[in-house]
Length: 137
Image 1 (cartoon, rainbow, N blue to C red):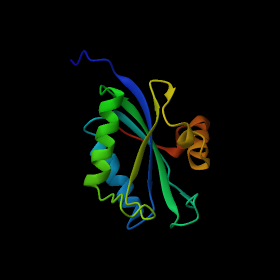
Image 2 (cartoon, rainbow, N blue to C red):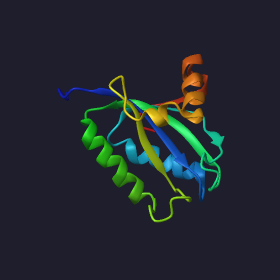
Image 3 (tube, rainbow, N blue to C red):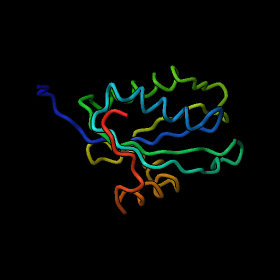
Image 4 (cartoon, rainbow, N blue to C red):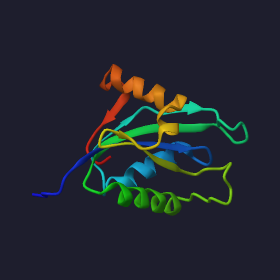
């Protein structure tokens, strides 16, 4: 039994290039080794808020982790790179992974208040129907 403290997290996933759904699915798979009790929302399409890039497909993921915040942030950056994120081409984003809430603290207010995140959070509050519930998907 792991005695380390577990923390509830909410993570926003987004992709606007390539097979966007597969990009989100691959991110969930990559995170499943570090986040337990994963549940994901349905996917929603959103325009690029800058108006300069293709539309995004977004998904929220919730789960628990034993990683401290700084370690989880580093893991997400590494995961983005492994899954094809090229920061030299900011308009085309294979995968964007942001911690929105960590242990009941809003970590990234701009992401939390964004229309896609608020729409997905509202769906979460309505009920589990919009969530793909499953452990380590």
